[in-house]
Image 1: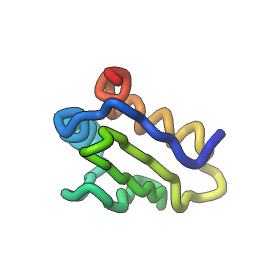
Image 2: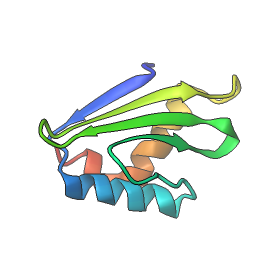
Image 3: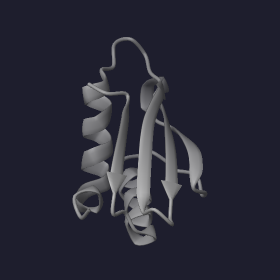
Image 4: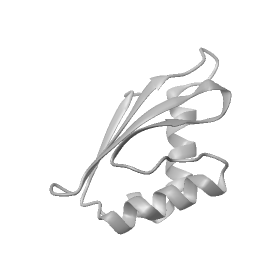
Length: 87
């Protein structure tokens, strides 16, 4: 499983939807287009959005050994909902 994923065709509205969806799961995404997101259990993800290219990059930068990358992606994708599927 990759420690980075890219999503194309992502609008600013999609990014805000992702922020709100993750917030409902207790994960606060700071304002800005290049931010570090601190999740539960010490998980850290870099979120970089390029509005001109409509490209969202997510990269796992730190995680405990007992948390798999697959688990992290599932939480992100379920929190983001359809925003990541509307590319």
